[in-house]
Amino acid sequence: MTPLADRERAALSARPVPDLSRLIDPIDVHTFRREHWERQPLFVKRSDPGYFADLLTLADVDEVLWLSGTDLRNIRVVIDGKETPVDELKSTARQNALEALYEHYRNGSTVVLNSLGDRWAPLRRLGSVLGAELSARIQCNIYVTPAGNRGFVPHYDTHDVFIAQVHGTKHWRLAGQPYALPLHGRPYDKSQPEPEPEQEIDLSAGDLLYLPRGTVHSAASNETTSVHITIGVHPLLYSDVVEHAVKRLFAEEEAFRKGLPMGFATDEQGQSQAVDQLVALLGVLRDRLSPREMVTESVRRAISIAAPTLDGHLTDLERLGEVEADTKVIRRPDLRWTLAVDEEAVQLTFHDKTVQFPAHVADEVRYVAQSNGAGFTGASIPGDLDQPGRAVLVRTLMREGFITFA
Image 1: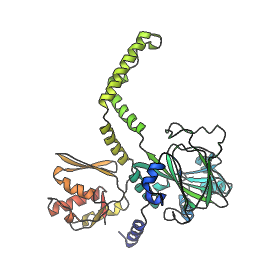
Image 2: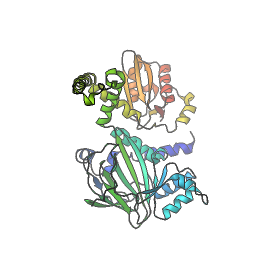
Image 3: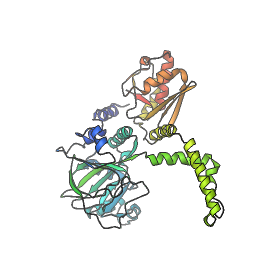
Image 4: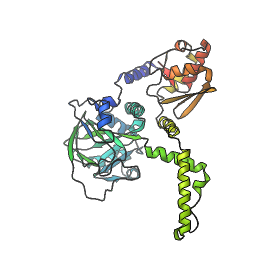
């Protein structure tokens, strides 16, 4: 790795970990879980405009837009709830797409950068750390609203959000939760009159607002451009877990896939037969569905939805031949993983894949997996493996992307 790349990675790793406790500070995580999570909004007022500067600044957004060129697939322009399709921007013959986007912005439209965490390293790290902490999928969208304008009419989201203000101020109007914790298939009915706000908040740079899903809200920038990060949290819901397990059982059991009796809608005997069959099928659900297995499957799903943490992996692969038993390495930070051990094999699951090892190296693999970011060498791993075997283990885990050079 080049000295410049080394310095860049070191600078990134030296930043404060953007975890939940840092987002909501000075509120502690226990209080947040008990009083706010999926219950009620949280407003954290700070007098620190640069609190989120390591995640994103106005200058960073400027650079992202400049580098986007004509690729606007993840960018939207919206004003007062009305969106201009990206295809319409691209089809503007007299100017390039980015200039067309800026023309909309100059005329009051909000610019939305969807999923910027997929291509901006600090936000990607935020999503990785927070996702692991919450066992959820994280999506970071950026909203840039010119002074005195509103991007969206009142609505609620079907996922929880943390709103981190990074530049300017924005006036938020919160109108409560008419329907608690709506599922994805129940969006807000925007045809109804705009509700009267129950709470109004001015969010300044460095402030944070948490909204549980279902909280009706709208926001308008004040005297200056407003930039905020919306950190969308998509947890696994109990409804998801049950639906996933039930659908799998439907695929296995033919009885669930049969139709109700012919003509049952006009035949009382057919309706009685349908009732009896449904009683029997509900019994099958009760007998065949295991809550423990459903939670175990949910753990696998929570791990699989995490974005791969593979920063520097290409360089690691290039240097793989340098790895010896005394090479200092480290488990990749913020990695979601699970370990299963039986009499025949060790299965290490991460990055939506499973790497299998012989059962006799279970202690060594467990040590590496549980190293919690502490650097180690193959020689320092406890267990019965000889030195060549330890070097092979380290090379294998580096090749698969589980560890990297310390």
